[in-house]
Image (tube, helix red, strand yellow):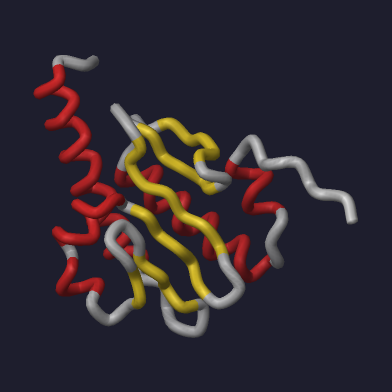
Length: 126
């Protein structure tokens, strides 16, 4: 079996999934873009990634969930709201058989934007 080459854009990444999953991924992408309009898009760790003075958030589709990766600080800040979802130190899993919490994704992304901007000022980065 031939291995497919890694995706180089978020569009390519999303296009590999069935239409129902594509819609969810596009909505997540749209929510993140709205919350972080100055962030750039890239593929990192084979996942769609938004970058603003460092990695902001990643997301990925799996068989039964969408993984969202706002780094440990993003999980910690929203741990009460995220407690109903499976997850780890820097990740959360949104089950595909339940509504995706787009507003929570937006608020976590806004928090991460603020955090990265604050950290870049401390480090003297532009």
